[in-house]
Image: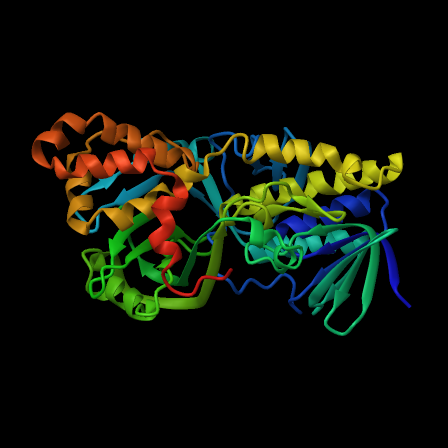
Length: 451
């Protein structure tokens, strides 16, 4: 016999768990399906940053309440309890490949002295966050089905049937698709056929002790080119919430079959211009990731399925954007059921919020600007540009405004660039005028596109 619910949620990451907790609190009968058998165990590379405390992000002005251990979302009107470890971040530094010049944001020493009031964000333990949400969801009656692999979705007269790999059917009036950036839900619903595919990004990360960059409590990004093939890659260092001298060290970029990311990591630690930052490093935990970057969906709803989080946008929704969309979608479903409007009209409030908060306020081209830039500018070009930038960037971690801020710094230097490196001007103009699909086209053809 089929299992019948008000709402079935597919995916138990931050978006799915938040939707489940919210719908359960609202009194709905909810099933939460997750492909992983250990729901709270994180195996994929993740920055685990609480984005962001210095600015509005997807329409929200979130912050962390240290006293009561709560992540606060005052615009939307909810909180998440979090009692795990965390560490403050006080800036975002972008280093040139030569290791000599970097662009910084704000006065690092002054911000560190001010402590919590001056932080940009914090890093946290995602396992703890997910365990807390899962415990709360189960406590209010949400039925959780780990190890459940969804293979089909069928619209019915009464709602939706969700079918797993064992043939079990979960019936619901509405479904929330929250299975992440490599979403099977989006594929099953046919949405990926209607979206632009930008590129496939991969990489590896390690929690590593013995890491001592000049400013340890900052997010550090290094745009580089592979020394053998010239393929754009990125190194990142993110403070760990677990120990003072521990960082998450990441190396990755557009997937190319010629690249060996373990070799790139070894080079970064032992031979690169940044090797002095590593003092007898030891890796505690190793993870990897593959991320498909698509254009946003035109509308995050089809056949009574609402899509939330990274399914609709891409990985930069982050945890905070994910929980916001999960909360909003669950409340929209609740209203639709109470009003007996069991279709698109019933959940229109979610669609309006999504359009206003996501595509209505954020420019996808700005986010992908650094990726496209590294494909069009050589390592020598980047070293030169970083050497002539002397002003700091605004004090922010917003991944959309940062490329615009960097562009503003370079714009002021156009006369100098025109005099010293005039061949770069045409490339800058191309970056400004070409559509993002054209800029990323060479990267979409690299590696193994998933269409």
